[in-house]
Length: 514
Image 1 (tube, rainbow, N blue to C red):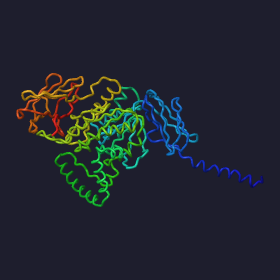
Image 2: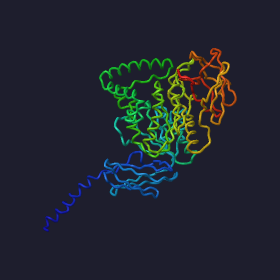
Image 3: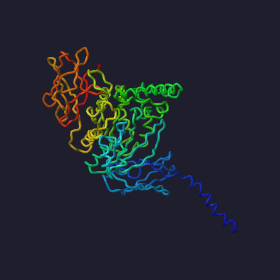
Image 4: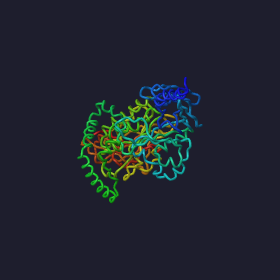
């Protein structure tokens, strides 16, 4: 071989090798799998990512060595063997034989998803004692992850965010309900806790569900018909004209409300915001839920419903459907799902009547027919002029009772008393409650307040109530001689005062639907 050929040969070899190197995709993992993460203990937790189709992936963690092969779509996934809680930082090493990723400071404990709209999104620093709670927010083994708000009609697979240890700085901008819930678990269980906050203020329940699943279910035909009509309209010039007019009206109404000391007026949503926002069916599932779908969790806490007020009958089907769909999507069985019932809001009513907020609360209560669910009743924690009540600590305390009792074996009161049955004799109504091991009491005054009765004319009147024994309330009303039905706390902002002995409010109810 001559001298010139010897010099050219290495370049020929290098040129032949270049295509195979350049065709190898970058080894990637999603944001939810990263430094400072918490893995769910005692569960086969998925780990996934992307690479060149056909690549051989190896994952090493605390003595486990797991392998997977990338599919034709470039995604790989494997599951770790279940391990108990561990508060000592460990590393996860991922390799495709060419590239390596090391995830550091990984803990094992309890992981909960914190979902819903603005009252779940409500920041810790805005709680009544937010300044103190933030200052006391240094919990190195409590880990926080905030998922950005992204609305899309196309499935997203990742987002931009990072896990952080709880510090005054990171806790300050995190969900107050989520933080308090997680802190209680961390302190009581003595294990690391990971919280994933994917809440989005103003969101409607239908946006949290895969659109195709809604379209396939005949119960939601009217919802999806409205959606399609709205989608067409939102892309017209007339929609922009109408939005401008709505904004002018909003500004005038908001000024009047502030001057009169009334609650804030809801701001109109622009056509573009609606199309990419948190009301359109499927948008949040695609942009927020899907990138986290499958991550090992213990359960979900949920605070939402305000945006579905006025559609209670639909919500009675939609909310349990959402829970069932999420459980199917995660493939982890019927994981715990606990929610906050809507609080009291708006002005006090002088006469008993109809209430869209009460109807929505009823739909939430009915959803407890699903297995492994629980409801925190907060009919006493709202504010008449603030749709975002600032006492989030007590909200979280009522939620965490459910988890501690049902999932971790503690014996605390968690279930608000519920209507059981009633008997009518000589114009008196005796209402019996299931107190779940507790007994009834009244707050502040002896009279049991918040009850209304009606006769066969279905006109409602306030009733006088008094406690009888541990679990009954006797009702009388001089205006209704032959009562046929009862309501309790049936108003947007009811005056009601019956609780369990431990202070859990009686669940609002009605025995008759007009």
